Length: 234
Length: 224
Picture 1 (cartoon, helix red, strand yellow):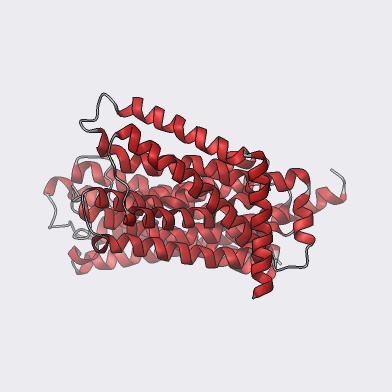
Picture 2: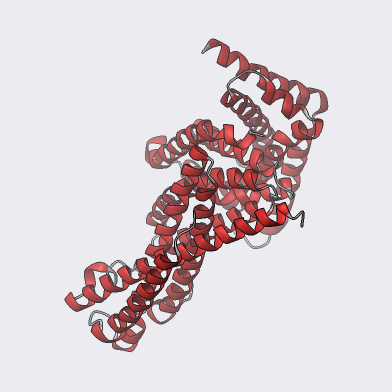
């Protein structure tokens, strides 16, 4: 069963509107951050892109994790398509979060890269899911590929909190050179900043759901094409 | 339960017996470990003020890299000789096969460590071995074997086989490596086991979590 075309159209439209509102919220609605140096106040607005990207990526990997479990339970191809679609989007949002984080780090901390727990964890997560797709790419038979990928997807997702925790503990002994971005995150945000922050987060979740739905429907199309090729001995 | 343990033992003993006759895995792991120590020696000799500073890193990286060599073989020989089908046809719980294989890999890596540790003491001219360190080594190796055996089963199904194994394994193993290195540094600086409990607990949690997940998922890895 594929997602209906109509639903996709509605979602696509909703995502477009949501992202336009998000741009307005991030650039117009949100006031300048008064708690950072005036020279980097414009750069601070990257938070409205960076944090939603990070949240969406975690949501994506969580969906991939649940879909992997459901695949192993039901052996239904649907969940393999879901897992793959979500993991792909997770990688895309992770890359967006890492790049936007680096762009913020340069003006704020004068370096593109620090071994901050979140940054390091994110890079490991990226490597985990690149490995996930390497595993998929190295198996030809579809049902076997789905099974192996599902097992790896479960192992990979479970390691994320452990990695985060160990890097944080590691850094509490080796003092963190730059302060973690806690103070620029949630708690330093004024009321209008908080509104913009929530709006952009919701917009990114709508964007994620839309992309996921499109990717799943593409996955079904690929599935049908493979079945047709099979029938034609192509 | 007794029958389950018999199956585990049968698989374990089979692997150990093959290894005792061929010595394939142990030889390659041990020679690789020596080579790694040589390379580390040249990598650090001139630039590091005190060579004992790099012991924790050298120890864990050597174990990880040579351990992955041994893990890679866990299922390849079964697959190549066609004996995997025989194992799977046996009317036993497949998780018992997992535990047998896992224990075999665990023993191979532990034996390699027993060989590696005195060698490092000689090369670095420092006795850094202590009882808490051995405990941490065991816990780390257990986690490594627990995850590595499953991933070895995954990798054997792929075209690239053992080439893929480290790519799959290392990002998941990162917490174990960090806990191991951190605790080794602590013990070398004279910290008591109690100060390192945080890392020991992390290792125990990691081991238990992945043993349970492996127990639940191994069926799907070997299923034909």
